[in-house]
Length: 286
Image (cartoon, rainbow, N blue to C red; front, top):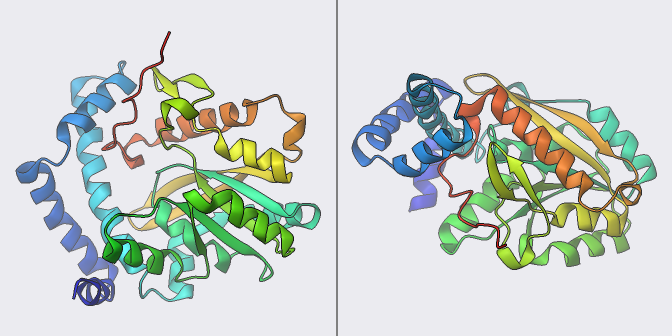
């Protein structure tokens, strides 16, 4: 029943979806006050130089965007390829294709920024030989997990559980399949798996380094995907080369560079990052 309802909603035109988004925003922000305390605390600590007026504007813009993200993601269930390509564009794809001429893998650093779900439409822009794998964390609710997998695989991407990441990547390598693997690298690593701390958005932050470590193992060319929200329902992702020979970089340098890219992207348009998560729940032990 839920899937049928979500599929029905996804068939609405964008104009109707955004009316729905505006209604949900009013409920979520003013009535439910969904995670407002977490969002407010994150913004205040990340932008100490901004006034309260500026912070509240970013806060409201974030909640508007979060509601847009929800209806836009549902649109993945039914949107046609040509329409998808008008709404989510990519620049510098030729650099990715060229990297696959000399590498088995291209690893792409992503953040929970812009509509990261729409990055699953990347196969529409790449050479047909290319496999796009997206790492994800399986949801406990099987119905919702199945729904997100269906959305993410609608345009040819392949979802890879983060728990099977290395095994699946090695399988792709053994099969000789040229692959682009997307890593949402702004996850909070467990304390026992934290190898790098950085000052990120004015806070001492544990940095996820798994992408870099696997990249060195399989000699993947590494890119960062810089996303801009052009207008409501329109995004552009630009592939920025980071490391063509990851083994030549000191340990964790690639992670550091990509984290700085993410920080710059957030500071440019702060409302479009996922502020409702507890990013800084772990503290460094002395």
